[in-house]
Length: 83
Ligand SMILES: [Zn+2]
Image 1 (cartoon, protein in one colour):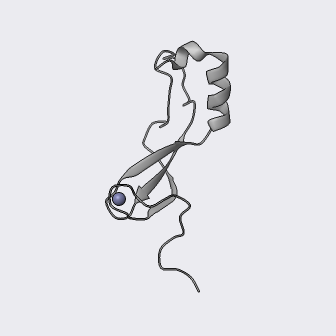
Image 2 (cartoon, rainbow, N blue to C red):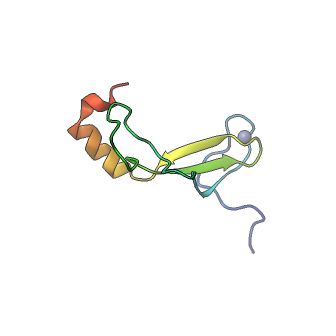
């Protein structure tokens, strides 16, 4: 038996109780992702982003794909990531 909606490992939406679905990546013509804004010369994003979207209200969450790289850079250059 297959269920009519994709299975989700994310909790129900806090806004509407809907189901989050994933398997999507944020894209654009340019290289979309997170860049440290104190280091403007980077050509490639520090991490690309994956998205999960609530089927009930469209609430969208983004997740960094290259989390290990982000952790590594944050340890090497903590001053870049002050917030
Ligand atoms: Zn929702």
